[in-house]
Length: 425
Figure 1: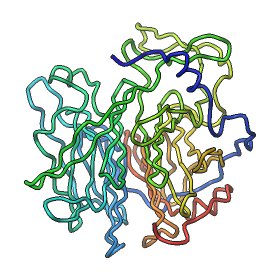
Figure 2: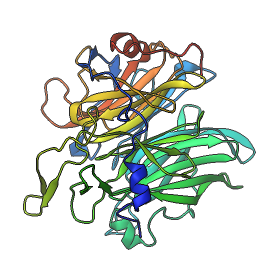
Figure 3: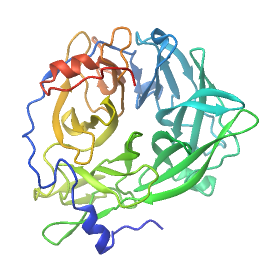
Figure 4: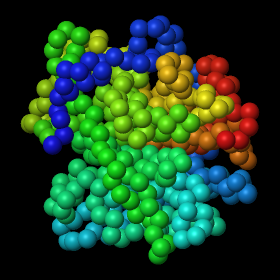
């Protein structure tokens, strides 16, 4: 059973912030400067059960112009785009195992480079499958994805199909590598749990996984006035994590607990997690109303930070040099992206938003990815973000898609004095 209230020792750890909201001063949050996307992918429509969620940028080291953006679209599977935002491949989700079961639902995606498989070195795209409570694993070769998921790897969090159908299943995902192997961090829908999986190559050319350990982040918190606070949600629903990223240089994982804040912990899920920053709504009292299926909130006591507005979503890292760079976090509640320095303190740098330009603005962004390699049309690197409220001209129907931005535009136009990589990663 996942602990729902931290022990006294752990509570003391959890409420001590290590970065932006710690005792040292930080600059006031500036008004976001206008930044515009270079281009966008085609709209994905709700009526087609296609919902853009999370991108991963694969850089073709031999021919950068052939690099790909691999994305999830939930019940619509995976979409792969080129650097012009044009679709080059669509991967259907897995079919439902039974009449009353859910089909596949790809939620988040990330990459593993130079993975040893059947005597060769390959690049992998790894996606969390919320409908199946497992992973979808694909070799990236010749501009296309080929599935290599081992069929007998099993569920990640569930012990039966009935439990899978309860949907407390695989949700967010981040991959990472070190000298010991290739790993995936997978969060659990509607729970505070995060699992560490080791990816394993098999002689038959498939890739499976083994669960190494799990971590349960807190669901209840001790407030400065002595009260205990928990996020307001449906009964049995807890403060889940989705956006995650690993700084492989330092071996640090950053975990976005959507209604709480950003945690940092060793990527191997060892040691105590500590908070980098908390949401403005951290400590906000709320009562769930079953009749309206909504929360009724009281007055904000001011215990939270002053940057992130819930939900806290896509996390990604732009590295400028060996041990320096930036952590970017999507602040869905105010349609901005918060920027923090990498390192021990994780000082808050500022925020920016993506406004109307040659393509429309970005709102309610779920997922994001960035690379520090200059690509054709994207000087300084490429930033791809999900747009949760895409509104193509001439229609009011609901759609989502992905926006492409040049990092040089973000660095030079944000007013945040952001650095750029001087060499490829």
